[in-house]
Image: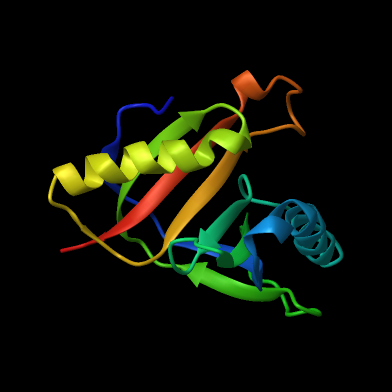
Length: 154
């Protein structure tokens, strides 16, 4: 289900994003429109994505999701509508890749968080999912890949 987790240091990354707080059940209807909104906003400024899109959850999801729908960019963007510019710092993270349909993400996160806790690692409150391969690239959910990352505190 998940690849062997590892600990690594990320590099700083410019982003364009929108912030959303929604009930869990609204996620499927909100995510597609949100990513389209961010992609349209950066395209209108002549900026292309600098990698796959991701969601940054400000806290572990529960009955509500408090998160940002993010696209990495190579150059800063001007704010437009709900889309704002951001910059991710270089940070230490625990990271793995989940193979499978989005419905299995909860179980994958559970397995990943067990690994982090077993290693007595100090987790930050936020987490993110980077959608490396999804339905836009491949119709077979078995081929989908989602990178799971949890920032770590020293």
